Amino acid sequence: MKTQVAIIGAGPSGLLLGQLLQREGISSVIVEAKSAEYVLGRIRAGVLEQGSADLLREAGAGERMDREGHVHEGFSLAFAGRRERIDLKALTGGKTVMVYGQTEVTRDLMAAREAAGGVTFYEARDVKPEGFYGDTPRVSFLKDGERVDIECDYIAGCDGFHGVCRQSVPREAITCFERVYPFGWLGILSRTPPAAPELIYASHERGFALCSMRSDTLSRYYVQCSLDDRVDDWSDDRFWDELRRRLPEDVAASLTTGPSIEKSIAPLRSFVAEPMKFGRMFLVGDAAHIVPPTGAKGLNLAASDVRTLHRVLSIRYREGREDILEQYSPACLRRIWKAERFSWWMTSLLHRLDDDPFSRRMQLADLDYFTHSAAGRTTIAENYVGLPYEPIA
Image (cartoon, rainbow, N blue to C red; front, side, top):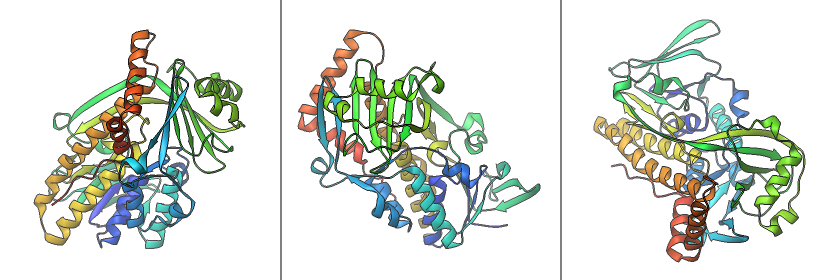
């Protein structure tokens, strides 16, 4: 089998890249180790930067998002018994974010790829990217017990943090930067109305909390927890009681609770691999970087990588310029490190870091300054809605 771009990974980044390439007339085949049902079962991010929402529209997969998603013009920071709203739209010249779950993004992209006749292999075993330092890269895998080889021009590694693509790179060719945080997020999904019309990020002496949502009837909540905790340690009643303690009194009093339909603990880490191009293979999204969920950058950074790779490949095929491929890694990394900085800063600002009263006072001073300064509010808003994409020329 031959194609122009072999994409490893059928999560939102791989599917989005496949759609954008298809609309440019560039052929692709997607190879995924898991089943389609497994991919759709992942509960992930739900806040899309305006640029990410625009990319879904460009890919022909934004119709349901525009119909069912929720445009948010701001969010709140809660601390010291107060709630301060960050007016995204006013502070960024009209930019907003879209609340629309990653599961729904993936579902829409799957449907768009099927409608376009794109080829996707699910439940592929023993996937191997090969020959990417030469002129004839290929992806091989087992499907229904038979070996399949895909010859291609380029390989896009969209297979996540634990995927095979980054692991296939020689150790001496890649440098990894990492910070692992000493706490996690306990998250639940419940069929209850959201606590507020917009997201609330809460910093409390007992730890961080987040009130988020997926729809008018589906809410997503988080509390900071110990990495030693287990999901079984947290009954629904214990979770709701702890969440109320960390929220402003008016929000806690009006909170609608109900049985959890999903509950999990996620560790937090910051991770970046440099570079992101190895011969004819490109790392995309979580294969190259991870951010803490504070600030909602994970899926959006993956979309940013997809946009950049789509642009450089389009120019490569349209104009025959191989030199343009060298812009991919530097352009991605400039934006990635800025998003890493924002996610690290938000994480450090809002979570309980230790039992030191001085550290807590510094957090409160930072929150007070940034929410009472026009420059501070603008800094938060500009980063939250997404910094401009790096130019490719």
